[in-house]
Image (cartoon, rainbow, N blue to C red; front, side):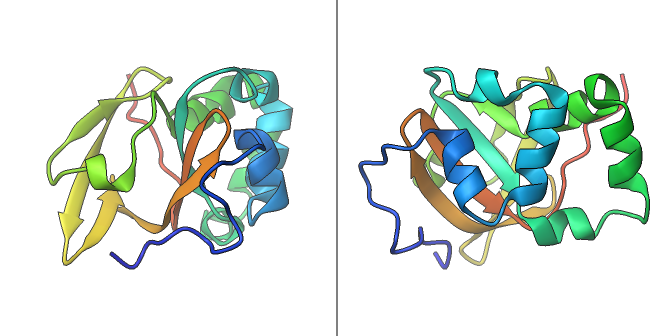
Length: 149
């Protein structure tokens, strides 16, 4: 699979998910987590699996979408962010085609494995198994939007 963790990351990570995100390519995600008041939750003991949109993924959203979400951080932004988090630690090797997982938001995400690549709701995992002290991060190339209830 072409989704190997960055060589700079050691398997025995000491930074939690939030600190790992802040140090990486996730400045927009970190800003959104802070605005939504989710930093402390993701600094908890976990374990958590986070499907983390890189900054480039947020840039693909329609113009003005992120600003609108940040103006109401306890509403739709919180739903979107918690839709990227699965309780427990799910490594890339654990993911099978057609598998589903319930997110912290309450809805289910669906995985697809095709040609050795992993997709979650259509977003491709571009870097898998980035270790954190309280779980694992998988970098994705899109922002996951939960279904309307």
